[in-house]
Length: 393
Image 1: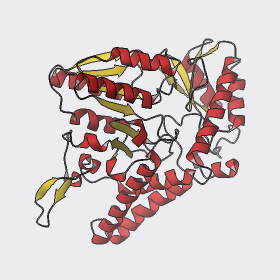
Image 2 (image 1 turned 30 degrees about the vertical axis):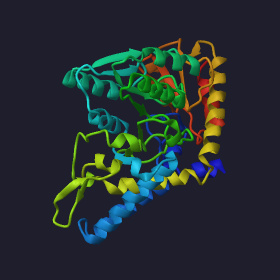
Image 3 (image 1 turned 45 degrees about the vertical axis):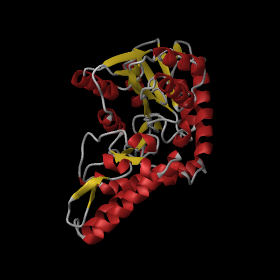
Image 4 (image 1 turned 180 degrees about the horizontal axis):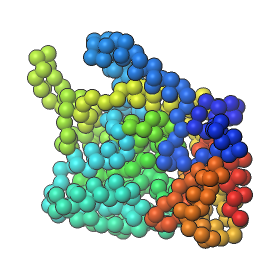
């Protein structure tokens, strides 16, 4: 069943121009391949909008339906109400919305880990300069247990901490943070201090992989994208904002999509939910394609079944790497995610990635730390893992 399911993903097929180089794709954490049904849906909606008239009442009705459908599809996948979802372009966009909408005061502190993406780090640095904030960093790069992660974060909190920004799955090591426990620690700390404390989560490597119920996790913000593990088109993502958090924020950018207007076009205020953080016109056919991509995965199995397969494959790859001379995995235990990162002691990481791609095996080199990252999806085949391991001799 998986083999026939994979046939629906053109990006996983061997190129007819290179029949002697079968493709083994391990870059889902960078960008996932689109299923054909999503490509077809994308083209179908573009054509339909043009036939209706791009700015006609009919096209407007279609766009409204597409917006509602995607918002509900994402909400279902995350275990939350659709009113808590703002549609964005990607994770970086969502993190920017969250970070710039917080009511900062001079002297406030942001706590990061040393495993955050440069997009988040750069935004935090800009906030630091604009609002005279303090930025502190705790080290999670060498963390191998939930207890160690929790203790590290708890020890780094201070009375001035107003926001903690973390990745659910660390994009470089593949370690999955105990997010619910971290949230509880942050909330208890804030309660003891009598001051607000926001928890922002970068979900680039968790949304589309982990079974999620954000209502239970207790986070304030959860920024995700559709073009990685959900295998949707690039340019569409979302931001979950907890209901109790929305009212404490001021949108950093505003436009008609986030406003309530009366029949005369007069502004009545902001929309009541997370939609207030949206601005204006987007490429709506991409939204339809993402909805299609997300629901297409259910044809193979439930999110729990897919996640269970990811964990089995990650363990298989991790164990195989452990047996290779000159290969050192970043984690001491199989990752509880789809990311398996390792150091290659027999040459440069960049050269290895280049060499493997010449053989049709696609991975990524990371700079911090210097390593190679393989992304294992439920779509990954055991034979692809075997091919990769055979090359590491």
